[in-house]
Image 1 (tube, rainbow, N blue to C red):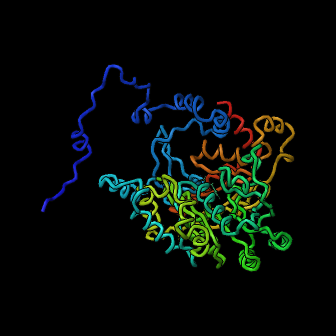
Image 2 (cartoon, protein in one colour):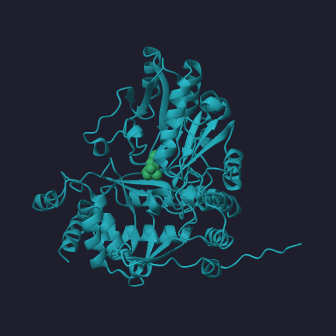
Image 3 (cartoon, helix red, strand yellow):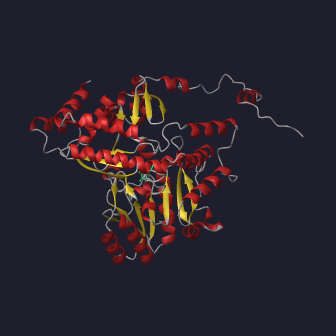
Amino acid sequence: MTVMTTPNASEAHARVAAPTISSNALPKPELITVEEAKALDVARMTDMFKAHLNPGQLHFMKLLGFHKIKVERAEGMYYIDQNGRKILDFFGGFGSLALGHNHPRIVAERMKFQEEKRHEIAIAFMSQYTAALAHNLAQISPGDLDMVFLGSSGSEAMEAAIKLAERVAGPKRPKIIYAENSFHGKTKGVLSITDGQLYRAEFKVTDNTVRVPFGDIEAIERTFKSDPEIGVIVLETIQGGGGIVQAEPQFWQKLRALCDQYGVLWVADEVQCGVGRSGRFYAFEHYGVVPDITAVAKSLGGGKSAMAAMIARREVYMKAYGVPKTAMIHAAATFGGIGEASITAIETLNVLYDEGLIDNAAATGDYLLERLKALQAKYPKIIKDVRGKGFMVGLEFQDFSQTLPMVLRPVVGMLDDKLKGSLSGFVGALLLRDYDVLVAFTEYNRNVIRLLPPLICQREHVDRFVDSLDALLARGIVAIVKDFVKSQMT
Ligand SMILES: Cc1ncc(COP(=O)(O)O)c(C=O)c1O
């Protein structure tokens, strides 16, 4: 028997003869190497960001003081910057860091996968990794949510969801209901059901949509009754970009019943609230209901890879793509189910359960809410509302644009349209500058700070976050505004 040994990378490459470079070979452009990239300082990064990425976005980074930071490493609950400063991460990559930064089990599996020279692209052959990942997702998902499409972003999974729903609803029922303040992604298809003018800008969106207030069951019933062309309803189970907004618990049972009655397909967008964040794998599980189609992304990639999934009821999927003639209409794209991303997602799902992270999100999330509610009671003139589920929490500030002393109003007004009247920008900037704490902002509600910490977050992290916020709010609104203005001058 011949024993095969795996050559290491340099041996394998050494066996390939180096190509002879002729004198008229293409000259190499001035390319930066990986090592040089790691060593770039903030000034050079800024120049390149301005020259090649998004110069306008720098404006916001400067307002928040984010532009001074170069992250050198990230571990668990923390970013570590160029000066060795540890920044507590309650932003959590907008909910994409359930396992925290560089979870050791994820890093180890990825390194092993590379050392074993496993294949990445699985277009020709079936992949053992996508098969296992789809199996795991079906095991986790309730009811007959058994069929899985893998992609690389939440938008792509949501595109897959609405295309599947459209095929099943059929040409006589082409209309889609979506909610006020919804966010389902920025790609062209889902832009039609994303409610923000910021993202819609002047783009042409489709006209087969109907908008209803989020959580308004009567409005949905009226629309179902009056418009037989409605075939699909798409809702985030907990609105993220809208400012962490939840429907009444009884809404979901009624929605399921109405969808069954009128034969409308329900698509639950769990891209932000799913993968354990709310204290259940899917937020809709809190209400004992199962949608027809759902989508997850963000944390499914374990904080290390781009991975997204649409999961559909088998019956629904089979209607749309179940036979050879229809199977390739929306089969995975080139990188859908790429090897290392798939094994990362497989490991992520295992870690979530092995380490009890979903339970932790529920219990420590309750503690976070409890502590923030106590803070609201302490500062009722500053904090208007605290709400959420698990580690998906919103902190809404009172709108102080009218109550701020007259002398400060023009200063604040001059700063920026986005921050005007909103404390969240000031608080976020100062939490970072003075307390090494990072929080997220909210697209549609400038008064809301979003807290989406990794699900590994412990009580001590909650205490550190809430104590920092407490110390900052104790300065009072006027001092906070003045301190923020000063921060803009340094
Ligand atoms: C609820 C929801 N749906 C869809 C998306 C789009 O995901 P992605 O940014 O990965 O395309 C997001 C992203 O924030 C989201 O929060």
